[in-house]
Length: 403
Image 1 (cartoon, one colour):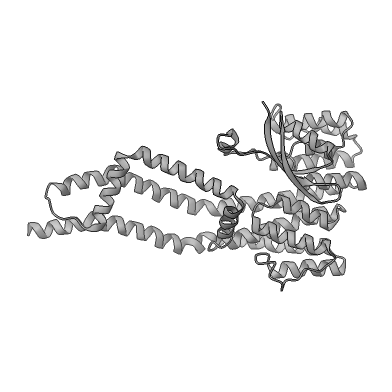
Image 2 (tube, one colour):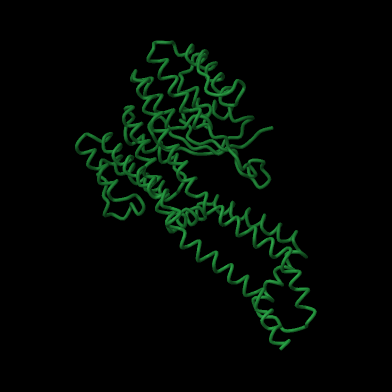
């Protein structure tokens, strides 16, 4: 059955291209785009309303396997082992696992005459676009082993950054989930019993109690409508994020979040500079490198600022931090990139920027619990106070009635 795919990529001269293809499979789409000399950076099934991909939640993460693959291949290449032999020897996962199957298919394509980078480009879910471009440059320059080592080191640091951010988010998520479950239990089991008890005396209930009883009754009587409403709300949020205007709003709000917004920006800058260092050291022109990193960026505002850098370099201009084009990228990082270009030591400057912001992310992640603890304390305290007043205010009224 034909499937429509949305794609973005770069032409041979570095220009950005995008469009739709209706073909039988993803592999067929990649073959068609390869014949058109398009370097694919994103290929996704179009998200129609009833498309199965609209309900896809989990995507495979091959980061750890890719790092091990780069390390092994660099070692074998440095030892003089032929590429096909090395690909057959590399075992980074269990036999029959998805990544291992992909490796065998890549080896098959290489045996048929494809370059390694071209074969890896057929599997964008397994091989990062930055990594593929670096490998392609390594194949051309003859420095594949060193580029693979640099790529593996950078990917390890990025993976550690992601782990630190996930770890820092774990505590607030647990608190929010626990509070949500507590409220659910109160509304479902506790409040109905109190409503029955207070109803026997016929006394007027305070406004917070009436509101809580109303929520409890509505939730129990029309829970299916509530569930449908939540699903519809989630679907509308997803659709709004898929539109350009909606995505600009949501991505902007994300970057303005207290504490978290600053953490996201620092992590993005660290990732950007480390990946740019890989591509620059591999000998890829900076304009093309920025184009690749622009396409791999998820946040549209950061993507726009990377595009501003690319356009400035493309037209032969310097980065101008005073023109208002860089609202989120730190001025220090931009000035260091500018200085590195002027002095001819861009790779060193990029390493310094990446190291600095990686340490900032690590420090912020470690202190995140103490930074957001006051916010969580106020929020949880307010909810607990509201529930307590809703439950105990009527008791005090009843005591007065009895007296």
